[in-house]
Every structure is written in C-alpha cells, then in structure tokens.
Length: 117
Image 1: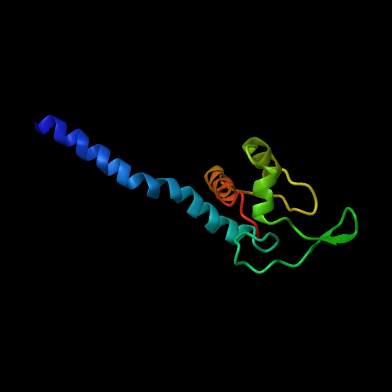
Image 2 (image 1 turned 180 degrees about the horizontal axis):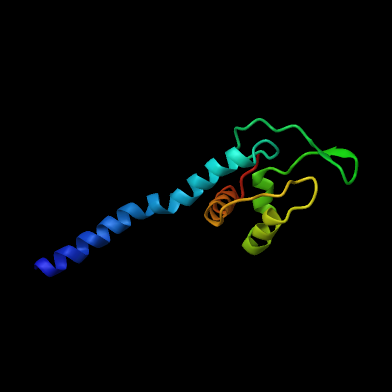
C-alpha cells in the first residue's frame, strides 16, 4: 500500500497548489503593469483613467487604451501583442521588459479579457 500512497500524496499536493502556481504570472504581470504602464493606461478596473498623452506624429492628445480594451483587441494574438509592446508606435514609448516580465504582463492582459471598464 505504501507505493500507492506517495504518488497519491504528490498528485493531491500538485492539484492543491496548481491554482496558486497558475495565478503567479498574472499577479506578477499586474504588479509590473501597475509599475510600468499605469501612467498612460488604465491597468485595473479601479484605477482612475490616466490623462491623455501627446502624440507627436499628429500633434494631438490621445487617450491610451485600457488593458481591458487591449485584451479584447488582442484576444488569441499573443505574438502580435508581444511584438507591439516590444516595438510600439507613437505615442507609446519603447519598452524594455525582461522576457519573464513581458510574459507576465501579457498573462495579466489576457486575464482581464471580457471585462468592461
């Protein structure tokens, strides 16, 4: 009976810990997005809408999209979202994220999909 007991315990431990493991990238992504993106983007539902930013190409002020609208626009398009964040267009500034932080931010963006802010 003992050989069956150890795999069962391991399986139960993994099952119990999986939601925590799965939420870590999202939580990290939320933290990184608040630190790096919230000056221009609405990163959380309870965040006050940031002021518009200047677009030097069109000489006007523009509102950066919320993470909820970014999630809707890039649903199922991880590669395109990653490329845009790494090489953005004006007025978004160039971003320098570690790959692990960018993965976490993208996971957080997808976690807010289908939310209306």
